[in-house]
Image (cartoon, rainbow, N blue to C red; front, side):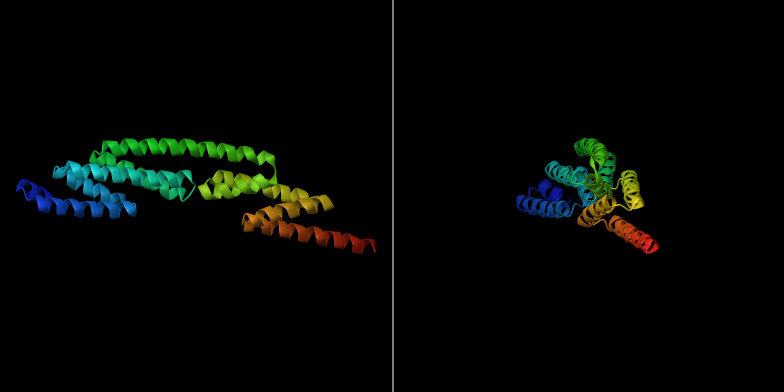
Length: 213
């Protein structure tokens, strides 16, 4: 509003000061990914007819949306990134910021397609052995894929039970292999299950030895 009044009264120095103040606020909001503040700035810029400021704000919103898209693609806080992008999309649509809305829609489609591809890759990798199942479980937890997390857990539990049931040296080797991969990937739940299974195999072998003696 101050800028608008200054421009109407040909106060160029005041216009420059107002422009600088606006850009400082826009930069602060962009750096903290404060999309709500940027949308509010855009609303004010539109109502006051400040096209230059509006263009800068729209650019900042697109940058923020792009950063959330990158977080999604990196599997870094996926749920939060999805929520943020959909919020920006809704706010942009409400305020008539078509350039932002279109950019965000493109980001969401691209990220959704990439995530679906990653899901298929992870699920297909389960056929390649224990190491990939454990890695897949960790990735599924990171991305928030509860169905694939449950699938990986069930596969690992089956392999642990199968290895422990026979009580053979090969079975113990398999358990140790699962345990090492799980510990390396910081999957404490699976590492604990394999430890319990190994303890059970040792206990059963000791019991059989005592029966023979």
